[in-house]
Image (cartoon, rainbow, N blue to C red; front, top):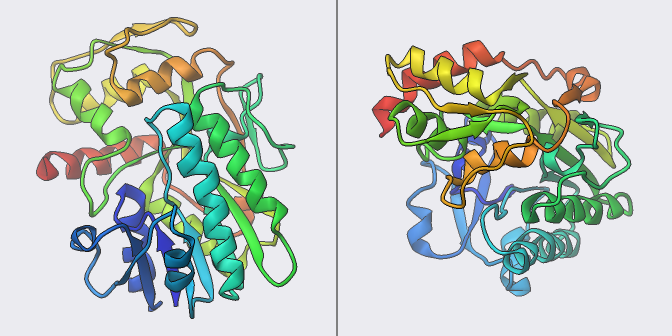
Length: 305
């Protein structure tokens, strides 16, 4: 049995579906029964909350592996830290108490990026970014890596910006793609960042669970491209006449800019992203590139709303 936290979310539903289709028994930790309706068919569920250690321990009981995906991106620093750091601490404790053998933690490239824009699997830890999401995810992955050994193997996954088809619908950067194509996004900062399909991220998690080394990071990236090029290419693919205003790196957006547009502002304060992902590629990770990924997304996203 494999436990997934965050299984009803954008990436979680992709991973839950993949694991189920690969023949694994899958259990999802959900906050309430209403969330269970979002799960793929055939996935077991258990009521559990990140601030309820006993519920997490019950959810992990009998599981050989845990995929910890649950996280927050848009709350205050205090709320974000409570979910991303203390929540991770609680899931780690529950997994160890339950005798879990392998723990795969979903972090982010934002947790290890350095001032030169490098995202590397052998990064010493810490991030050059200062927003609550990036800093708390950096802290959380240090908790995970500190747990390596003593009977439980831990792996940290560092996907770059995730987009593309998901059973749960158009979340994550998909919302930015769709809104920009609808003329609802005024501007973005033209930062160069990494992009990767959700389905490829799920496959990367499975590869790490099966073949990953204890105490290692794995960067998951399909390609690097600037925000402006990605949004404009997506608009072309869906036949939209709308184009966003592209601001130079270092620019600021207004306070009412959408959450994922603001990520362009965050990354725009650093050098263009560069990726070192040899370890993930060594596991057999072979993602599609940005052009193919955008085409797949364009074919899917309009039909999902």
